[in-house]
Image (cartoon, rainbow, N blue to C red; front, side, top):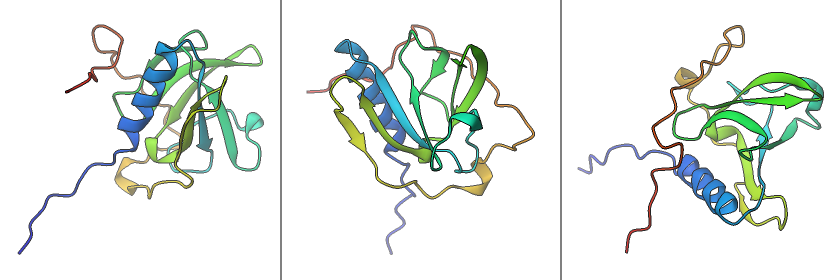
Length: 140
C-alpha cells in the first residue's frame, strides 16, 4: 500500500521564482489573477472579464510577501490605497511586462475551502521575514 503524503502545490514556488527572476533582471513582474476565486480581495472596478492584472514590482506595492498564503500586499489604484489578497491558486499567470516571459498556468487551482478568507474579514498582513528577499537559492 502506497501511503505517500499529499504533496503541496508547486504554484507558489513557481510564482516566487518568476518574481525573483523578473526583478533580478530589471523587469516589472505582473500577476494575472482570477478575481472570482475564493479569498481573492482586489478592487472590483479594475476587474475585466473576471480577471485582473496586478503590477507586483517592488516600487508598485508595499509589504509584498510571497512566502505566506494568501499573498498579501498594499497597492494604489487610481491614487487610492487598497489591501490586496491573492491565494496562489487564483494566479493564472506571472510574467515580466517588458517581454511577456514567465509562466501561464492556464486555469485556477482547486481551492481548499478551509483556506478561503472570509469576504467580510480584511486580509491580515503577514510578518515580513528578515532580509526581504526570497530564501530560494541555486542548488547544484
